[in-house]
Length: 398
Image (cartoon, rainbow, N blue to C red; front, side):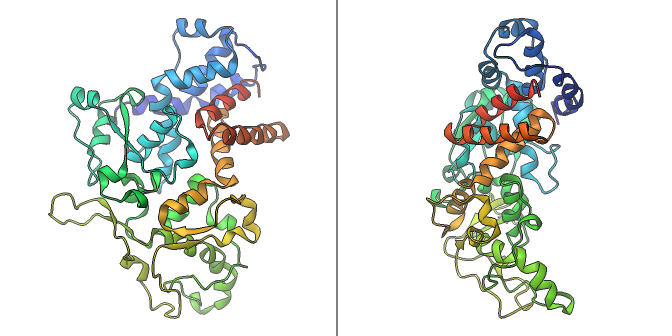
């Protein structure tokens, strides 16, 4: 993968930068040494001497924002590395570029409100200039060729991404698009095979920073748990009542939002049918009925209606938006529910803090800073660029 070494270098420099950052004192304006460390931290590459000289005396926050908006390495390295683990089950950065990552990069570049990440009818593709220069193929819902060739040619993502709509390119109706959740990259990882619960679980992990084991709640009613979940695993009903119910009673009613989605990776010969997201409006995918003899009295999914039963109980602490109803039809409205939560905002900020500062928030000052950044994130119309700048300024001296 071209530029793979550059991205690896951006990750590997973390340890040494952390030691250097400990010797810096906070400053309203930058000296050259601070400018260098800020640039290395945000962009993952070394700036030219002229660039660093130009940053001397600048307001620290403005300097950070300038790096974010101007340096291509910030997008090709930093944002790519931040987003890539969200797109695969191994959660690795060492994977080919795809439309999920490209869309995150484009949203950050264009300062698109990040709380639309899970609901927008949006995808970023190569512009005409890159297509012509590198002889790139057109976007295809059936393969990843466009992004693989962008990767192979080291295309500048800052310069050559342009926004489009999924509904225009994939055949999924606009009302059924759900931001990165309905990109080909996400579908190929989380809608493929299985029961579509993977899409819900990895969305919670990637965008609310909560795996199911940490938020399980055995007090929620079990009436929406599907037939494939046995009520006596290993002949022990206590295992279901004390463990299985804790995840499935909340997950299954929300994963129902994905009832009309699948990823077709068959060897069919019809052009355009291999390896693409499938949406069957009004028709529940057969995967929702697999292993239905495990517990025939279980829930039979009739449609894509979802309910968030975690608005009550211990998971109310995730801070669900009071202006939203907590129920709806399909993936788009579920994405809005998840991204409207305090947990979503806190997750993005905490992840950026860890990525930029090379450590998790570890003391009272760090936690206060994260709370301040969460408030700023929401008040700035969910600008992830602002979060990155705020983290870089804070972590220069902490």
